[in-house]
Length: 106
Image (cartoon, rainbow, N blue to C red):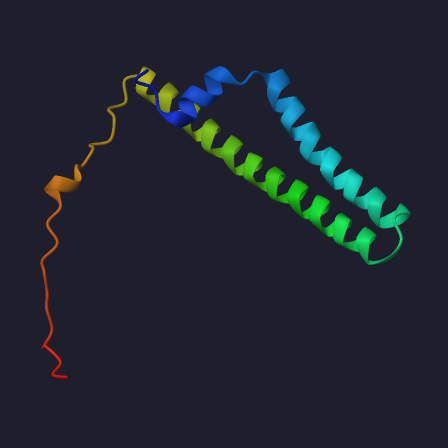
């Protein structure tokens, strides 16, 4: 399993699975809209805010994930064409000088 997480996800989740996830998030938004219209009082408002907010947050996260996956696919295509992979730096190679200021007397 030498694949990255994003690459692994792209292989595991089918288009049908993505359709179901997007549809569920949209259903949350629609359920929140319906609760705002049909549930009276503060309970309807709170239920609407929770459902709509949750659905929109999930949709936003899914859109960002799709953008990242498309970038991963593009990078894989470029590597397949013979473009060299960018050099990887290890954290051990990075040296951060330790700077200390004057000690404060208590």
